[in-house]
Amino acid sequence: MPPRPGISLTTILEAATEIADTNGIDEVTLTSLAQKLNIRSPSLYNHVNGLQGLRKLLAIYGLEQLLIVLTRSAIGRSGDNAIHEMGKAYVSFARSHPGLYEVTQVALEPSDPEIQRLGQEIVDLVLQVLSAYDLEEETAFHIARGLRSIMHGFASLEQKGGFGSQPDTNVSLELLINTFLAGLRTLKNQPLS
Image (cartoon, rainbow, N blue to C red; front, side, top):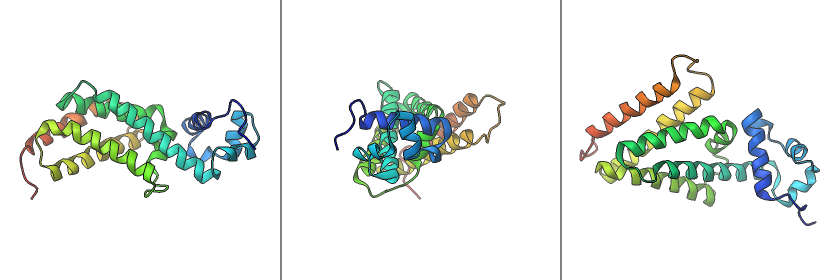
């Protein structure tokens, strides 16, 4: 059976993102998605391989969107400015797309070549930005992990209401990135111990 006209994989992923961002990833089911798209659930099988297939495609879509946001934030910038903008872009993505962000963090199939490729592209982008700090290669990888941990931790705590409403979390984020950068500057040309 051919796919219904007007329903594409992109349309499906955008609708699933809306459900995830509004109601949480657990509310993304084939039934809820079909209702949102005003189609019958079996029609989705023309595009996705069940709920697990949908979630995997949604994770890939989320990683693609995150990569786009991070790349745009880094273009034309270097050093501290690039790190600041990437950090803010990362947290902003998690704020704007809480459900989509959540599914990117769940390793549905960590060995999937597409998930690995996108993850590596994000790491490569961060390493490219970190090249301004003249770090040894292995140190740069560790620093990239640290930056991701900081951004993910901040975004996750904020999503779960872990910071409360006062004081302004944007100020907290700015101070966190500044602290990270201060530590990063002390590592320049230092070997790992």
